[in-house]
Length: 274
Image (cartoon, rainbow, N blue to C red; front, top):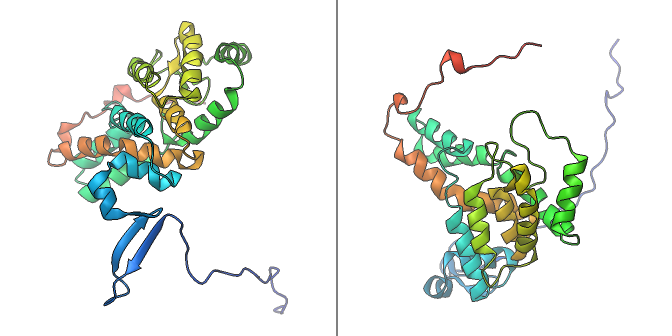
């Protein structure tokens, strides 16, 4: 006999939705002839065409997230960061994803989204940026050398593979990421560099004897921290910074055959037994 009793408890939702979406970031003045077309756009109060005439991309990127235009020194630091990490390089899994998608005849419009999905992971990628920023914010109250000694004493280094002792810091291919270290040394000398970059340099130097130091994600996190960006935006900002290089690697191979990329031989596959 069929029961009239509902199988699951029904709960009434009392959520009240807003009548329209609201943003403090962007204002559009509608055209007198067509309200669906904007006649003027403002970003946090600044006219878009004035920004086009007088400001650069780094200025407006800062404005979008911070609600104000950067000083000249802050803009220079952000611009330097964006140039420094414009391309993760062909060894990075995200670049390889773009290249493999390209020779696989993926629609060119999808090459960058595929690469960015890979870049959103946690292996020296965007997925660690928020955690790295929060680590830098918290640990600046202590000396970098003391934090390094404490972490080295508490943790057990893995028998093989890289060791990321803290978000944004560790080994890269079992060694120190030399390019990231050189970039950090340059950025920390710029006028807008702040406590996160300086603390990160002290912390990374304390790790050198163990074959570790800055990772690219750590440098990016330190600069974003010093410039006052919110940690929740960090992963997306890292994707924006790296997107041109990822796309360039994909487009370079877009008309190439499958044979333009290596094919892993059977001998290079390792299947571990239980």
